Length: 93
Image (cartoon, rainbow, N blue to C red):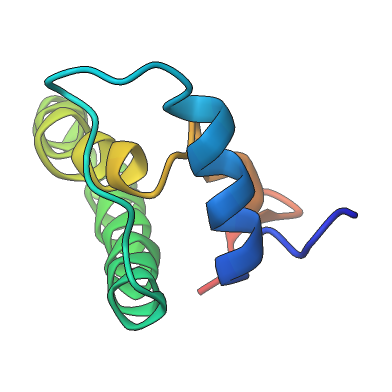
């Protein structure tokens, strides 16, 4: 069954696929409360990222993506979450 991308159940499915092999870099599975908090941080981070791009600060945006967004995506088992926040060329927040 396909769950909405933003749901905890979808996260659990992604986690099992994304982190199918145990290893040192594999984050622990989040609680639902922790997931909700982290997912909200990711939403806000995409807004900050888009603001940097819109202000012409591409280098800062690249660093922000690498140092903030990428880590949140990994924690949430998302390969590239930006497509899931886009609506007609704009981020849904």
